[in-house]
Image (cartoon, rainbow, N blue to C red; front, side):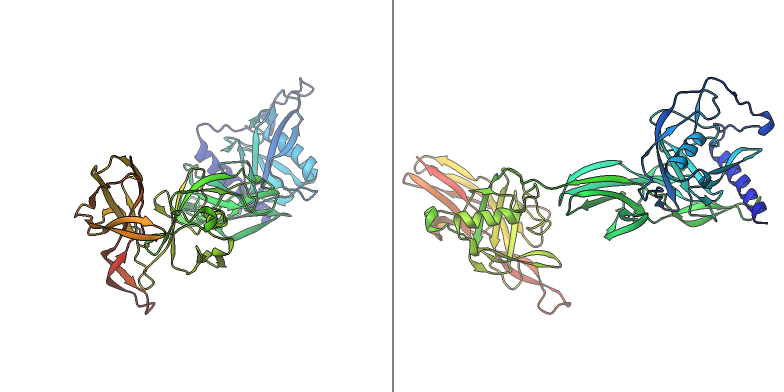
Length: 514
């Protein structure tokens, strides 16, 4: 009974393949009608690569290696002057499994595989360069360099398995650097269009087993970002199912469409992780705001304004990239003191506990005018970036506004009018648009303090006009609060919106009077 049912399944699957791939599919007429050129001109051996999927996990070789992208030397066994997928499977089993691990049976519809990689099954599918073969394995010709994929499928009820592949077969990355892969595929039997494969587990192949990475899944676009901490070779793969439709043939010829969780055939990307090399130091600019006033540098650097000061950033952990944290370490070492900066590591990442010698958790950080989307330990920076670190003033509602003038430097004559425009947004709220900042006092920075310019405030549009009677260099800045809304978290989880006078983070424009 088992043999009869298996034979019926083989015929049924072949018929299904015929429906999917006609009219391109061609059949052998049967054993009596097959023409084989015995002792003819045999084709020269060719090399192809072979991958074998065993119900969602890449198979292993008889030596325990991964059976993915393994080189196979194919011989023209029947000397008909061409190479078939069947001959590649014979060669692959001889080299990496065992000769008896592969078997076929000849039916009226052509050759049908009955054993693959030592597994007795009729539920198999085969792909040449990512495309399902359009005929049976004996009638499918292959050529030098082809990438072959043989699958022992997992779904024995609806035959809905998806063929999947990463956008990269191989990748090289430095340790602790990010690598992004994209996974796409299609339901092989249905011949559906290629689409992103989302919400499947990503892991590595280890000794014939799928080893999942901690909470790593593909997103809605099929993308996944990985990071490896140690050098070595990793075979990245995936495991899971895809919500889909398939056909129920159990009541054949009464066929109906059903919802299925379609298993995926294992994709593979061979990732070579190299030991990271320290990157060449870069220079960025750093500003530090201390509760509404720009901080000053240490005595060693002459108590200058800590605004747009050049900072030479060192790749401290030698991972080949630079983080905001490394910039802060460098800034303190040069312009403050090493002990003036401290961090703590939590489940949420790196938290600042001391900035510019002030013990505080109330800090915000900006890169080229925009707040960081991640912590300082994860935020990467580049040569020439303009960084702004703020010790905030509002310890109750955390409503401080990031502000900036429309000009960072101006050169003018004595008593010439200079108009500056001030705009900004609430740093924690990350407003979508910069807004004019009105009714704010304008002044200059002097020895770490704000010195008000008498009678000068920003108007409704955020504009202020200033002038200086003496030659010199002036660091124009601003001080004040903005009427705004914020959230009161004091009775968490009961959060309420409140009216606040939000302090501003100090802007700077360097004015040179000649």
